[in-house]
Length: 583
Image 1 (cartoon, rainbow, N blue to C red):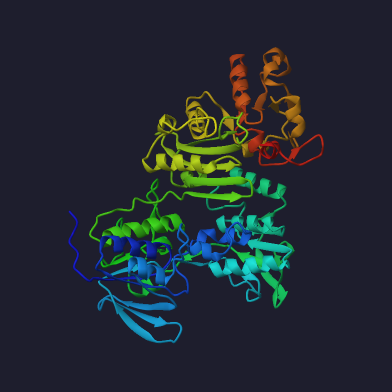
Image 2: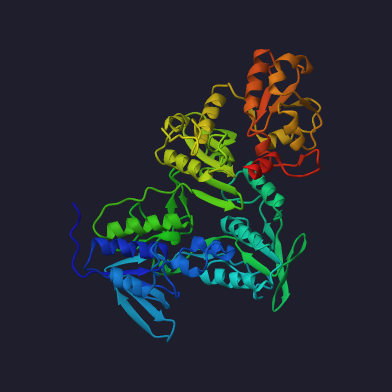
């Protein structure tokens, strides 16, 4: 039974974007009499920050659309007052919280006047702040953090002026990659500078990240990894980015090097800060003060798989936090279970996604793991809209529990990520993943979904039936005279793309393998592959049945090969790129 709330409560919310206004709206639905005051430092509220790159690209007409309801109403203070009776104070900064007096001291940024607002319950939704490294030249014009809709509008205005020729993006995370797509669609030469070893360093393993980088370069985007920015140069506006490896021409620069939780207000009020650097909260989103809640980017999360405390800044999580806070402010007893770090991003015609643990994270957490990469079409291959995708699935080798998935390709990646996220949320195994009764019809899926195929492959690996080798491990064997690379593709396929720098390759189409076994030595290490390595697995079974004892299969096949390929016509497009273009 819900606790009866006193009438005319003062609910004060600091922060007027995702978590803040979500909690305010939820409180209003549950408590029609409460006085709800939202304090927002900026001029605009309740905007969809994740849509900003699409304003830049032109996919979304203007930043106004980021602040509209589905029926076209502008979500401004007047809208929230009329529809939800919320008092929203924009251009108002929360200076300090007096927990003993239960007041928030605020400053009107327009006239400088200060005042106090009393509260019965307080919500801190101060979000996060872009990391700003003090590079020399940071004060130059046309350098943007892409943190506020006004940044998106300013870049869009520059693009529409026709004066931008070269864009440089610092950081290859989600926003960095989305902005690369935006600039590319305008025909602006785009360079991404990332100091880590590969793109998406926070959520992709190397073999997946390298495949994304390869695709980006094929599309004309310059990816520079393991390169550090030293300074910006220009005359009033930026003209060049100087790194430890040279100078890059730049008419505009986007800084996307990460964010940090905005916790100064909470720390100064004596609230506990968690080990992740965000505000410590319990499962009901309460801080160390039972009358103060925190949600959104400023609040600490717990990882569902590992139980580890984490800082993760995602709009999806912030909205969930807001709902949980709103329910509990109205007497509910709702718990936030935790996060999986689920993300999905698009780069032109390639989709990339991840949920759960990466291989690196799983090993660091102490799991004994088994992994696989599988490639296939996202629906019946004979359907004209079918596209390819590659999945990397990670599981606990002992318990068979699913630990994480990564995927990339032109196919429907998000569907597979979401299916595995659901399995992860309930602690499911690879057997559970196969058992899920997913919808099938040729326009939508295969009889066995790609994620279930990956689960089957892991089952075969654990049982010793499938002996895969990762693309990175296979590359290390290219120069070896002791390893035979068995290419099982048709002659037409091999002309389209051959693995570059392979010294010892034998071409035998699968339908000829049984009759040409004499061309292979039983003492050799044989690495079999085809476009997606399904034929590679069949070849492994055939060869092992004939007494070959050292046969491996390149996981994901040529379609997932993230390194150089060669073609007879001297084109550099990979087999997967050709397939995606041909539909």
